[in-house]
Each structure stands twice: as structure tokens, then as C-alpha cells.
Length: 315
Image (cartoon, rainbow, N blue to C red; front, top):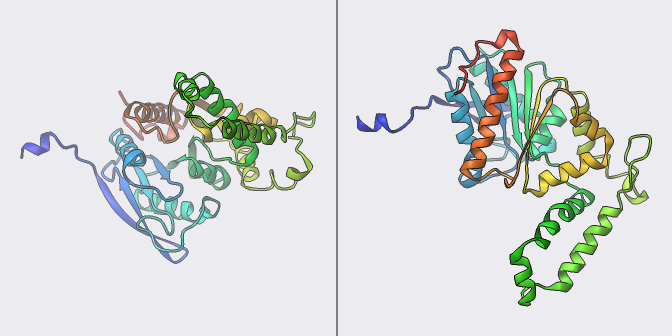
């Protein structure tokens, strides 16, 4: 038929698997790839619409699998088509482990897996998954590290600075369409929150105000940092240039030497896409992320001799 010449054929297979007594749904891409020995497990964060910017996960899976890398994407408990009560990214370790098991079982030729995650999925990967010997690398996009101090600092560095050089902002200001009092009040509030984080001490640990010292670094960010510090596998970190979440991550790495040291490890590759929003929602930005991921995967295959036959080289 004529449509066979216009519609790409994708080998995709639904996979049902168990997690804590609940049935979860995943989709395996590249089921017919006998040479695929390195796979990619896409970890999705909170509930998403499956259209628009978040359809990127489908596009990514098809792009990677067409290059010879089997891909598995799935819904965590209580999300999408999976059963159970909805879990947060801080509770997602069993879901990721179950998906990894299901992926390896559904694609028995796999010798290793790369974990790929955006936002809080990237945070979950750092918190829980680095130590699994089956994980050969991780791709982290705009990791979620939000608290009041980092959000305020990122707003000052990104949001306010961009507004002050925006011709549209000054046009609206001069025409009376901007509430000056509200804008100043928001700026001063963020500035006060930023100042609560004081400069680094010689101990290379952040010196915080008394109010923050017990809570700010006793939460998921500490678990992320521990995973990052002990990570010895290759890491690809992709940051958006026009995203507050990415800005907060950068602010945290600048304010805390421990994060800066982890980021500067030889196994970490950092790519920054100027102008990109949080979800890399345009065709241009999504394509750049796919190309970076594929290029990095090719290098990863070379680094693991037993995986040299895993995928065709991308053009």
C-alpha cells in the first residue's frame, strides 16, 4: 500500500509488570533489535499530558530505537495507565527498579541500561539509581532542586534580569500596565530570600541562617548530592538556558562547593541549550537534545568494549 512508503514502522510492544502488588504499564521500543546491548530507560516525573511538549518522550524513544538502542518508557504507580496510589519522585525507587527489571526481562540481549530523566525524574535517578550495576550511564535534564532560596536567586538572575533588558517590559511600564509596587515587592522579597544563603565557608559546606540550617539540606537534595558525589558512571547533564528549574540547579552548584565539585567530575558532561524552555518543547530544542543523547550514547558504547555491537552509529 502507498502508506507504507510514508509512515515509519516502529517496533513497539506494551509490557505489563508488577510493582508492590500493582500492575504498571510500559512500552518497549526496538523489540526486533537483536544487536541492541545497551538500552535506555526513560524515567518520567509527575503526571503529564501526553501531547504537546511532553510528547517528546515518545519522539525520543522512537529516535533512539531507530538508531539501534532499545528503549523502555513506563507509567509509575497511580499515573497514566498504571495501577495504585500516585507516588512522588521521592517515593519512586520501587517503580524505577521494577521498570528496570521488566526492561531487562523483555530485552534479554541487554548488557546495560542508561537512565534518562527530566526534572524530578532526574532527581529520582540521582537519589536511587546510580549504584545499580546494570546502570551504565545517566542522562539528566534540568534536575529539580527547588527551595525558597534557590528559587529566589534564580528569579533574580534569570527572570528580573531578562525583564529589565526587555523592550516590551519598558513599554508596558511606561504605559502604566505594570504594577510597580507589586513588582518591587516581589523583587525585594526574592532578594531577602537570596541573602539568607551566606557565602561559602572554608569547610566547603554552605553556611546557612539558623532558620534554614536544619531543614534546607536535610531533604531530597542531600540524597541527590550523595548519589552525585559517588557516581562513577558517565553522566550527561543537559540544562535549558531559559528555565527557572535549570537556573536553580546552577545557583545551587555556585552556592555549594560540594555540588560544584560533583559537577566538575571527569565523568560528567554538561551541555547548555540557550533559549530552551523547561521541556525543550520546540522541534529545534528537542532535536538538539536527541542529537546530544545519541552522540553521548555512541561514546558510551565505545567506552564499554563488551557493548561495541550495541547500536549502529548515527549519521
